[in-house]
Length: 493
Image 1 (cartoon, one colour):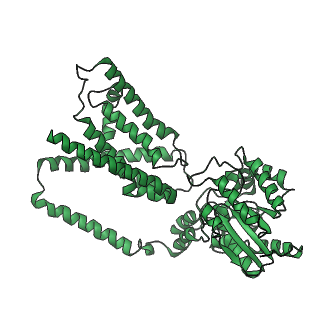
Image 2 (spheres, rainbow, N blue to C red):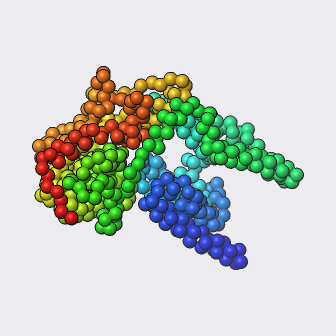
Image 3 (tube, rainbow, N blue to C red):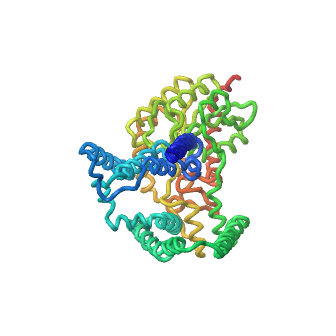
């Protein structure tokens, strides 16, 4: 009785802690998805769930069901095992990069594993026998080694290869299993067996010494910031372009209502411009700020990643679970509806949205609504996209002592943006201006370049770096000067 009381107390504490950890994971998804994924407190509930299953199980699974088990109980266990395995396999099949994970969505595979284990506590089900095959058991025994090996192989493989060939995934899986087996067979298993037969005793100092040495090496690398001198200077300069970004903003409804939108330019502008868009609009903001510093205009920034500047648009590819984007766009209209904005500039990675069913209608509604309010509408076409991460690819080639030009043909650019171009053709006459920045990035052969005069123009495969964005200044300055010359009346405060 006393033993059960202790177990019940442990079970209760585990349940409470697990719920707290799960809630924490869901909250972190709204702030930082990487933090929710990698931070131990937000993932601890998954381990605790295993402890809950162990405490509820009561005793180890037997090789066959207990003789006193009823047919109904056996059927329930069989069905539970099938559902548990289906939850695990279904998650692996249907979850994508857009799935809000971890958090609530992690409950499906984790609960499936818990149910599958629990269903086999009092005897092996059909699913339990299936998972008891020796090759599958071996994978389970090697699972920790597989876990340790797969990530560095995947990370280094992707680091050194720009475009993954069709066999890349197979090669990583095969290499992972070979190395995992070797490390399990010759390192992990001998240590486990040795630890079971011997006490650490006087050998504990060896373990402490090894851990201290590893810690000192890790601390040295951290203090020397990864020892960057091991990489050629040019490669480091190219790699640094990945950090060439500014004007990061994650627009919220609260920002709009409290008037906390970033503003650039003079105090008595003749023209007020609202830049509305996603992360591609953020990437172009250095150019707008520079123009605002040169001309009597004010630029207002309203940007949020993965959120196109469209009214009533359900983004099927949305990667986050934040406030409703439709409500956000409607709230943003209040900024333009009070006579404080002359021009609204729509900027986005249009190719990511144009293939969705509601795009055309949303784009037309957005332009029409802004015109009814009394603002002009400019649409900025997207810059060329590349099949590789530009800073990483340039740094990789510079590491080996050579720089290979990275280009995209006009035909490839048109292919990527063909759907948007078709949509744009039907609204081009209703938009006040369509700005095409792509000629700025073309070379003498007609191809688009990502490196010009030693400057890296992109911070990844599709976002402009600060240096790349500043190339747009002459184009935007000319366009705004034309608008000023057209006699747009100054707005009243």
